[in-house]
Amino acid sequence: GVDVVFQFTISGPGGGDWHATIRDGACDIQPGAHEKPTTTLKMADEDFLKYVSGQLPAMQAYSSGKLKIEGDLMKSQLVEKLFKF
Image 1 (spheres, rainbow, N blue to C red):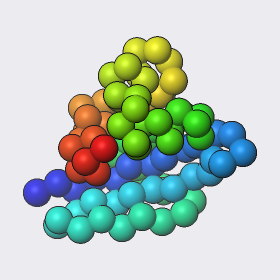
Image 2: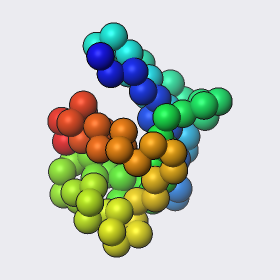
Image 3: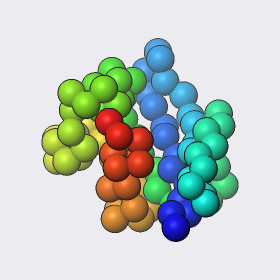
């Protein structure tokens, strides 16, 4: 199964830090930073809203510099699949 921690670092007035732990088919989302995330995704609040609403595909966001990824790049591709954007 999938066992990952995604750290979301969102800048801007509507931003903040959250992390999502996906393990054994369950997802737990908590505020704040995780000590050892599998993958960290960084973007501005307005771009994040477009991303999660499906208006901004991950590859487009990444290639245009709107999405910065640290850690396991391959696991970052799971975000769209797991959360069904």
